[in-house]
Length: 188
Image 1 (tube, one colour):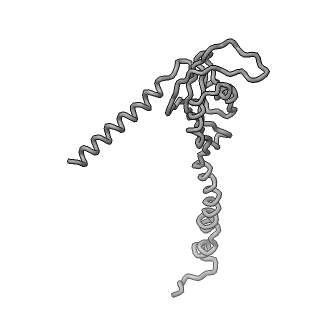
Image 2 (spheres, one colour):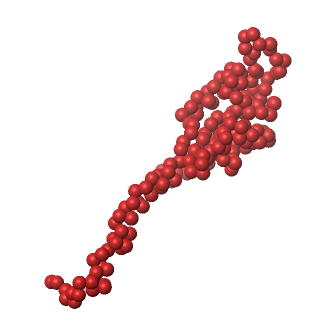
Image 3 (cartoon, rainbow, N blue to C red):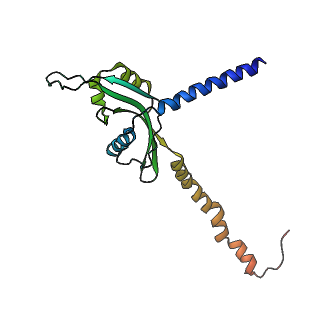
């Protein structure tokens, strides 16, 4: 009985936490997908056009841009910034594929993606913590196709040496089939 109650509580907790991720992913503004798509196309020359937004977590922050020393302060008020983890792929030479996971900042007030410098000017603690939370993520190369090509480098010569060459250049079988030496008997 205790095992069933524990399993039911674990299933219920999983449903709650799984649902929170889905709700957080749907809490983004409408123009965010198009702005991120445009930003990725400009940032990566080998960006795969099959972009599917995968937001594992999205936070909403109200921040005020800080003017640096020597610059004239702009009269803009607080802006709404959405920080999100985005997954996408880049493909080089139709062979080398890379899976990227990056933190992207979207300014919903001005409807544009913020660069790292612009986010640094905001000096917001929540945005910094969000970035540090995913600091271990980055670019990962998918090596399945490359390992297959490397395996071919070993398999093709081995096939040619041990299978094909024995079939094509077998002089003994040719001599026996055509009775070159006029020997009709077999040796025991």
